[in-house]
Amino acid sequence: MAGLIWFVQLVHYPSFRFVDDGFAAFHNHHTFKTGIIVMPVMVVEVTTSGWLWSLSNSWLTVNGIGFYAVIAIWVTTAVFHLPLHNALNKAKDEAAINKLVATNWIRTVLWTLKVGLGMWILLSL
Image (cartoon, rainbow, N blue to C red; front, side, top):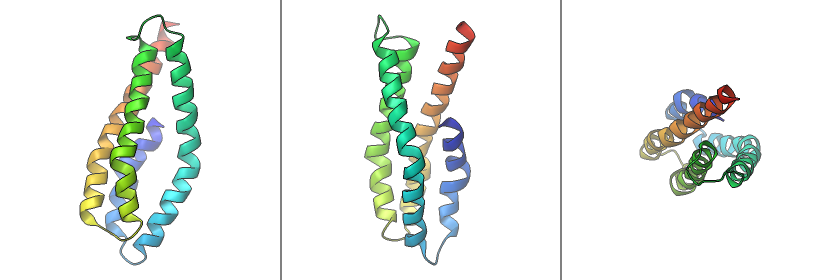
């Protein structure tokens, strides 16, 4: 997810600014196809992160921090990104695109943090 979100952050979302004709159709295609890829992975991620956290003997562990990051990603997606994408499904809106790019940094940082935590766990083995 970290690799995908970096691509989305630096390439895909900013490219929304360059689509004029047929923007709503383009965006509907984007959200549908992205959802097919991203949603199953996010469900597996929240499930496995929660399971790993449940095995911890303390709420403040590497697995706990990873799980909290995933929860924050879900909350950010629900609070910021779903409403923005719903607005963009109707028509191009530069302010919504700018807010999408700006608020997506939260998810980008959190998924990058998860990579760091995963590396820490692997190097600790």
